[in-house]
Image 1: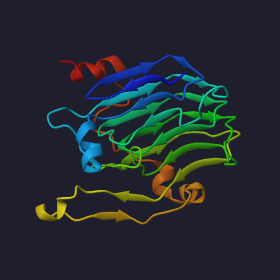
Image 2: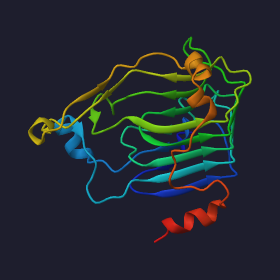
Image 3: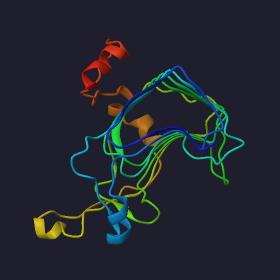
Length: 224
């Protein structure tokens, strides 16, 4: 299959208590981009007037991807300008659990077990990295403000991978006084996460959810 769930264009979505398997992405997410101008101007910009999306992937089983193209089972595409929650799920018998290239959110209390790698790579729980859309940069696209805590990784070679990133500003940014920003961080977080007590203890960056509040009660404030 292609995508189990595809989220874009200002949607607010809860995916819960599902079993998903043999998907290129069990969940893929994006924002609202001007696709026509993006290819012409060599930079995708967000469409004005459309709210950022928010999605939550909670208490699901993701099992198996040996008969499909193997990418991050739960994924944000470049241009996903909103927030997300990935909590209390089981990821098993797949190549990579989560792939984040844009957006901010929480990844908490998940089990990643018996994953396998692909193309000679180690099995991996999560990847955080910069990417383009078919070789074309997306305005302000970069993973940021992500809380990762209380996840476990039995039978997984590598818990996390953080790649090199580059923050792309629009071509007219200099005229508006904005500066181009580049992140030079490159490497793997395996050892760093274990040594960094700030990450080990975890901290709440999420201002949307409350730990003791039922999910459907939480979603009421997003309903029109």
